[in-house]
Image 1 (cartoon, rainbow, N blue to C red):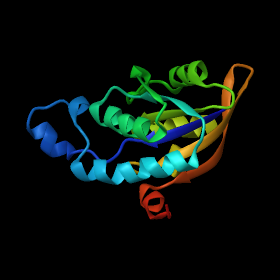
Image 2 (cartoon, helix red, strand yellow):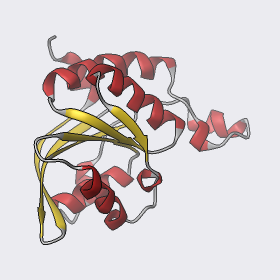
Image 3 (tube, one colour):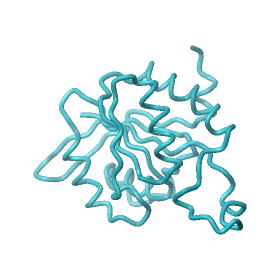
Amino acid sequence: MKILMVRHAKALDRDAWSAQQKKDMDRPLSPSGIEEFLLIAKRLAKSVDGVDCILTSPAVRTVQTAEILAQAFQSAEVIEQNVLLQGTPVKQVEKIFRKYCKQDRVLVVVGHENHFSQILSYLLTVEDADCLRFKKGGSALLQVQNIEGYMYAQLLWMITPKLMRSLGS
């Protein structure tokens, strides 16, 4: 089983958005964030096989990122999960991962930083989540195992959006 963790692409400026009295949950991707992530999604789809499910936080920017990924992976279903919102205990996230992970398939998960660093450090059994930060549009591929009711992961790769965009087609 594998999990591909993807942080949402660049969104509109948070301070400018909140100055308009708008909820952060409703903040969309910026035009440049969409443009940059379209290329990243294509590269991810070429690099990762076996995706049929994309779990995403219900925040607008993560849903938009998941929808771009679904187009790139073609047959992937997008499912919103509240447990992918900031502040949800990692053990609750792990339960959802176990529910959706399938043998010989890749579960894609789209979410937020610093929640993603906490989830990744938990799965890798690393104590310092600060050493595992995701850039906007960044991703990590994990090989996961269920052992006695716990998920353990091996990091296969973690890549920044800038490096992913620079890779050849």
